[in-house]
Image (cartoon, rainbow, N blue to C red; front, side):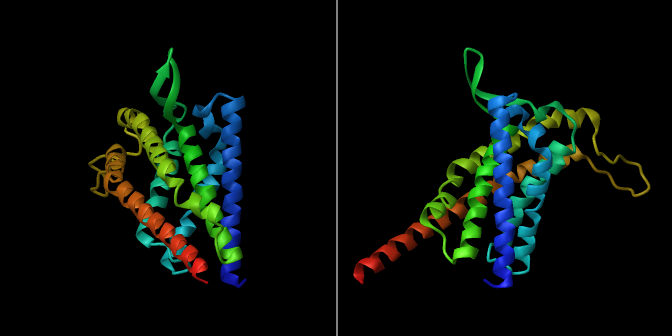
Length: 239
């Protein structure tokens, strides 16, 4: 294993461990604490480290250390960094522990979206993804169960994660609008105005073209994976 592979293996392995710990804390809070709605408050410090470390993925792609598409990588990382630092951390509002109920039975929520569903979706996605890359650097190949999870888990996890992210923004927007948070009003010495509320609304609208682009990119990768499996199995049969 050369220096490049050793570094990438260490990077991915550390993030597998980090996201596994975040998932453990979230599950523990769900079972023994106040449920998934308080997951962010329990995992904030760990999330700050693990999610911010993903910026290095954009660097890796940009300098050619890995072959991941730069635009797709940057889009995925930027959206999560924005949700973490630009919404959950930057804005002191109650929606950190609020949720949107999609289905209830006898006034008891059964299907819902909140910070906990977001963190669970993030954690599972990242554990699978970083495990995939760690195996690739260590073994030179990826065991099929992990490869299958990498190109199948997103089908469910990505929509849950994105819907939960949008829920956090939606529940925070009224607070931002009513308090003019982080706004720069005219006139000022710089002759420049900025509205953080509008900035986040525009950022949210970017999900419309961004999410399908990422989702269909992964679907295309999934098809290539199954095709390579079939070709490999056929080659073995022909020997």
